[in-house]
Amino acid sequence: MTTFVDRVVLHASAGDGGHGCASIHREKFKPLGGPDGGDGGRGGDVVLVVDPQTTTLLDYHRGPHRRATSGRPGMGAHRNGAAGEDLLLPVPEGTVVTTASGAPLADLVGAGTRFVVARGGRGGLGNAALASPRRRAPGFALLGEPGESHDVVLELKTVADVGLVGFPSAGKSSLVAALSAARPKVADYPFTTLVPHLGVVQAGEVRFTLADVPGLIPGASQGKGLGLEFLRHVERCAALVHVLDCATLEPGRDPLSDLDAIEAELAAYGGLADRPRLVALNKVDVPEARELAELVRADIEARGLPVHLISAASHEGLRELSFAMAALVSAARAARAAERAEPTRIVLRPAGVDDVGFTVVREGERFRVRGEKPERWVRQTDFANDEAVGYLADRLARLGVEDALLAAGAQRGDEVLIGPEDNAVVFEWEPTLSAGAEHLAGPRGSDPRLEGR
Image (cartoon, rainbow, N blue to C red; front, side):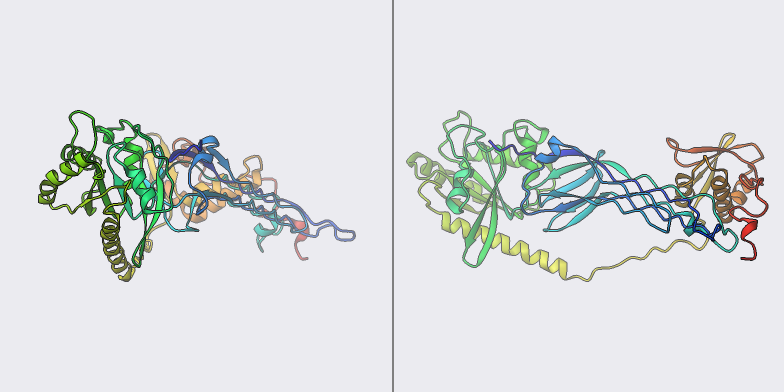
């Protein structure tokens, strides 16, 4: 039996960027050929791609940890490292991506739709790229950035035009089999349908998909039975059809009580009140069932719901029902087309003219620096290399971090943290920091032997 999984937690890790290379060109009769270290390659991304051939999230249930390849380090002779390959993860159409806390990230509909779950780290620059007229011979390179790691929830919500809702054994699977070429399992016991089934129905010139989803019982909105597995698969349906069993032998059940119970669960789940509905009174090929259907028909129509008497076994009333469903689907498609016809508004939100790209916050006796550039520069710094640390200090000073610390009241020797609380780098602040410059005759990254060449 094929296992169907429609909700998984995916642990995605992008590839790390390759480190830059610190190298000096060496050639006979050219003892000082200059820096020739190449850049590191970027890390691969983790990308979700909608694949029509994928129907379940089972692969990610069995293997939830996925990692892209890292970039290769740079090499001498100006050779850049190879970039890591992106990891493409096929997912079914209708997959919703959320954070672990439930915040929506992406709704993947349409073949080929892509979403980057985790971005690969940037490759570090080699010393050839760091060379400048003032820094002609850098003795360091930048480290590659680590790739992003995220835990996301993948939830499959079936993409269908019409969803059949009803109690177990109401005849939903039989109805899909009678209206389409789909052949879901049909049996005379509850919860025969354990996974959603889709069938394609042709009604005149309209072709639409019909979803047979797991049956519903009272309390499904709280997760009883197969409730949540049922309910999430009707969220995308343009219309709902109540399939009511008029020949049930269970005590305390009748079409009206079944309709009330189903509507109560739909209302408790939420978000489905605007879906148009039809009612199909099934199994009227049984004489007693036909009598009951005729008896309750007026009461249901009084609620404003169109009613069709059908038999999935004898195919009675199926043609009229299929055309009624096609009319609802056509109206929904026309409404969506009108919405898409509206011009897309692009809102530009440029950064303020006084946005320096970082913030300095005092935390007691310490100062914390937050910002994309300072945090990235810290991640790329090799703290085992004094010259690289000095280069970081120069970059931070040019960005204005030193002035901002002075304005915030920082004193010599105060602790300065750069980065988030759980992963910050701590410095003992020296306003005139020149680490790595003491042993050089000129500015960092210069070599007096190259002067005049």
